[in-house]
Image (cartoon, rainbow, N blue to C red; front, side, top):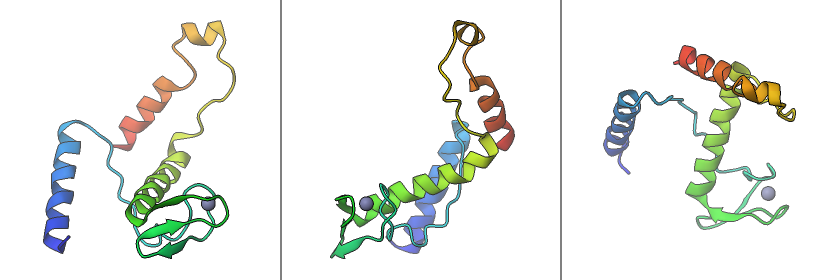
Length: 112
Ligand SMILES: [Zn+2]
């Protein structure tokens, strides 16, 4: 994809995200195709096919990059949003509408 086409696609995505009030995160794509998205081991390549010799993942280079970019974005958000509560939900918590949904929504909106 040419630089112009890439920029045009990026602007179209940003425009739609703003239109639909969707969170936008910019992630540095460098080195996102080198590590296994499942176990973090360094990947081997056969042309565009990534192979993890540790856990057996086999995927196209772009797929690996996309998954790792997504994981990088989640890691960027995690300190801002906190962790999801893993305690079992009680009837009292359920009556209040869950653990952190309202807080999370508020934090996401303030981040935007
Ligand atoms: Zn792996």
